[in-house]
Amino acid sequence: MTDDDNNDQDIALAGLHLDTLAVRAGIARTMEGEHAEPIFLTSSYVFDNAADAAARFSGTTAGNVYSRYTNPTVRAFEQRIAALEGGEQAVGTASGMAAILSTCMALLKSGDHVVCSRNVFGTTVNLFSKYLAKFGVEVSFVPLLELDQWRDAIRPNTAMLFMETPSNPLCEVADLAAMAELAKASDSLLVVDNCFCTPALQTPLAMGADIVVHSATKYLDGQGRCVGGAVVGSRHHMEEVVTFLRTCGPTMSPFNAWVFLKGLETLRLRMEAHSRSAQELAEWLQQQPAVDKVFYAGLPDHPGHELACRQQSAFGGVLSFTVTGGKQQAWSVIDGVRIMSLTANLGDAKTTIVHPATTTHGRLSEQDRASAGISDNLIRVAVGLEHIDDLKADLQRGLATLG
Ligand SMILES: *Cc1c(COP(=O)(O)O)cnc(C)c1O
Image 1: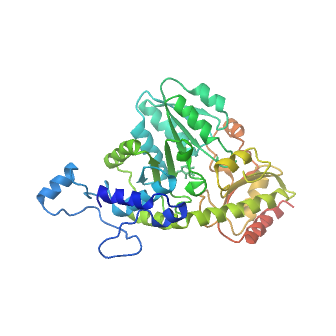
Image 2: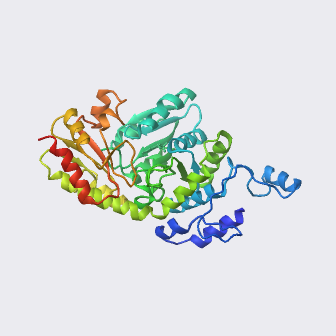
Image 3: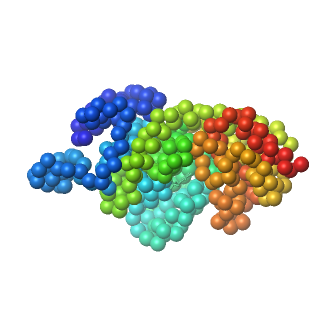
């Protein structure tokens, strides 16, 4: 495919709704006339002649050379996720962490400073504090919702603000427009991990973010099959990220891209179903005597409720709750369920349940856990697509073990 085809596609897709883009964006049929997107499992491509090879290598002619650089199936995924996020360009990566790493390696340099939310994915914290620090990138961690602390942490060499909203597992909601303003005022990039909402529920670029990163492993796949990621933003920024990926290699596999293309077709339907069930389960949990507190932004008494109503179209599939007691009681509930899977993954058709304090957040110090609100009696549920009555009965079974 050439750049002209890209432009044709841009024109054809202009003004279409998300549901249409989720099914139609990125399609480039071959001469076979296939209706569904093909998987191009090929590592390299054949040139017409020596002159064509030279032209494609030098970049004077567009066209595939090698699948670490470009692959038609991966490109279809990239065009589709770019269209959904409302970004000029996207790039597929081997994992969500590869998306975050590539963004940082491409857009930061030694001597730069990053302000990062303390409430991001644990491995993201490690990436910044353990690896980027090794290459002279400094990072300050601040609480997601404390805008004053973000402002105070910014220095002349601050180049990036990095955040996730809503947060895991307490569903805290940060003001994307306010964060974008802060980034602009400090001449730094706002990078948002949009894993929990996906573009079906929230589009950070439209609210002023510069770059969106994704773990496609979660809701974009939606059925727990493949590991992958994506970075979305302006052509200017993506050019740097693409160059990093082509050089360093954490690219998306064509097979995984094909799975994610399928996932994107049903993204909106799934996100609405996840959100509907999570809302019902959250309301039901609030009425259970053994449950202390429920954390879900769809509940009117959640501190992030109003903001979530403004910047999200639904509240997502992840909720958490505390039970009366401590770790022993939380473990008892988890060990008492029969349907939900005991696994740390989320964004799956299958509901998952986990004890954050001893798994996903187990590496934090007790003090950091306490300040992040991850108490020993906290349980996180990532609501899947099973029937809501069966999920309630399952949690009922778990809660009943508390007597
Ligand atoms: C899982 C996850 C990641 C990392 O993605 P991988 O695909 O596992 O590398 C990053 N951010 C968030 C919010 C996640 O949930």
